[in-house]
Length: 328
Ligand code: FAD
Image 1 (tube, helix red, strand yellow):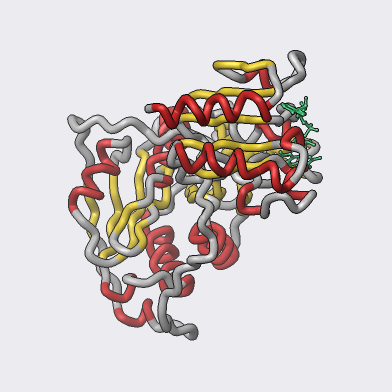
Image 2: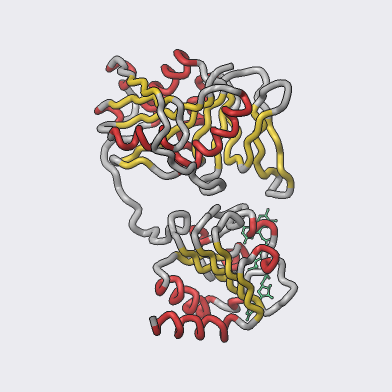
């Protein structure tokens, strides 16, 4: 049985925490298959601490390709290196996060390896008896969950929704093997050329990285009323989230949307104001550590999930909350 591989994301000198979420996913798979769990890290000037962290978070092996040519992400060169690694080590499973990098790179690699790829999975498991990877994701407009297999080709490849699982907890006493690989310059000859990196400054909202999210639903009433949600989020140093109904009405833009067809988040605190708790909304925030719900309907679904529920009008509750926070 081949190994289970996860792609560690290393950009601009930093290892993304999504790499640890993947290790948590991968651990379950490698244990069921009784095989090694490995992380692959590509980039330039990769720090030893980052490699040690991958081992502490569950990697039995780390494949490292540290090359000046990999300083900036170019799908062709990254794919060339990954394919060389896959051809040499033949893992059984290879997963990456459904981030911009994962979504760009994995289809490119899958096509060239002539294997299947399931995008944006929310659940991964192993089929008893066959050892096939069961790749589950919402399908048909989010109305069903489809489980997909790749029985005849290897590696079995999938991208996984970021923040749909907690990062693996580090254990500094773990040991792992580190395999450094060097590749010929020919592998880095690409048709496309890296010119420069332009940061998207327009998108201030980073719900996926926020520790606190204050989310508003249709119960907020109208666009102007969102000022109170914005104010509370700012006071708590958090980000503003929204239900789909809010985004459809144009009260907030799509990057704020939480849920099945929006972002999946897992903050320390999620405050849901005027949100009913539809299954599609919950799909995007149910892994939040603490949930406070404010809703005037005592039977609202969101109360089944909330750690603290406040039955009341958000226009009364939120100003009181803001006032108390300001006192501190
Ligand atoms: P409502 O369900 O209308 O709830 C409004 C709530 O506000 C009610 O519970 C009401 O009691 C309360 N309320 C009203 N006034 C006040 C007040 N003054 N104070 C306090 N409470 C008040 N939804 C998402 O959110 N994210 C998604 O990504 C998403 N994807 C979807 C994908 C598909 C394929 C489908 C079919 C649906 C999707 N939806 C998604 C829509 C989802 O089904 C719900 O329609 C939506 O989440 C409802 O939004 P809401 O809670 O803001 O509105």
